Length: 156
Image (cartoon, rainbow, N blue to C red; front, side):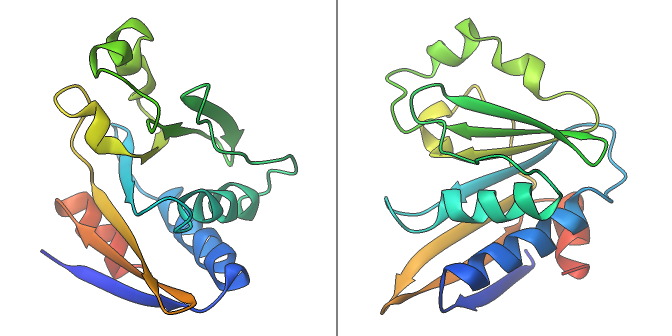
């Protein structure tokens, strides 16, 4: 599997990398949803990266973690972007009740925090985004899970 590791010294760098990643994602020719799993401890920067992606594509509003609502939707750059935060999910079956499968349609990007809580229900990721603490900074490793993920990494 192909992977890319980035050193992220501060929030501004995380936001800029998010914008760059989003610009690559919106150009992907894929019939199905593009799925990214964001992994990292609380406060590691998963939502900051998402904010960089969404605002980097031109969204002017506030980008917050959907911890209580499970999903936030954004229509930008001709695509639907769904930001999921499954941290408070008690049982993966709850995803079925909210109609989770309807979100993974054509022409969308699905960004999923705490994806392990939806195991067995969620589709496989195209790209894993692992964010770890590195002193006062972060280390981010992107790991392709299939040919779509590989293609994304070649463009970063």
